[in-house]
Image 1: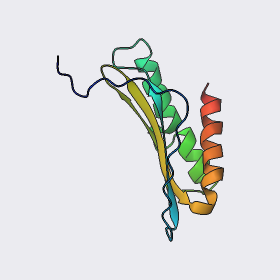
Image 2: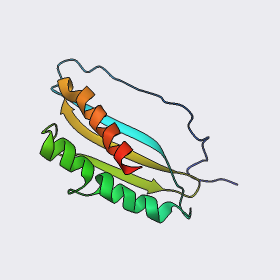
Image 3: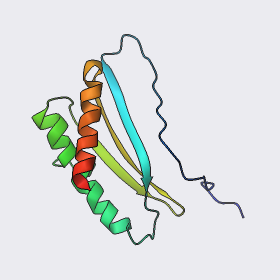
Image 4: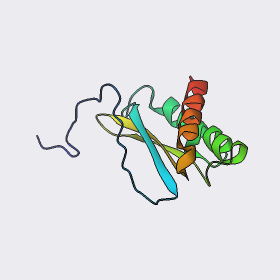
Length: 114
């Protein structure tokens, strides 16, 4: 049976990919993690969680890193539920010197949602 996209094994552990772009004024931050698949009992709850966390302009993440900290023009998150798996992604741009602070804030907001 041919399926698209082809099923992939669930990720394990943490993988960090960094690309040095000399002379760039901003760093692109993107974090992706596993999330419930389409039809999962947790799909609706995760969709609402994404909306509150970063899926809307008035979200917790955007309020924190944009309004309170002034680190970025805008932050967002998205949740995509597919047949066999799903993913949750967070992303925004910050000045390179503020990347560490921004990652700390992402983690703090995630911890606050659990």
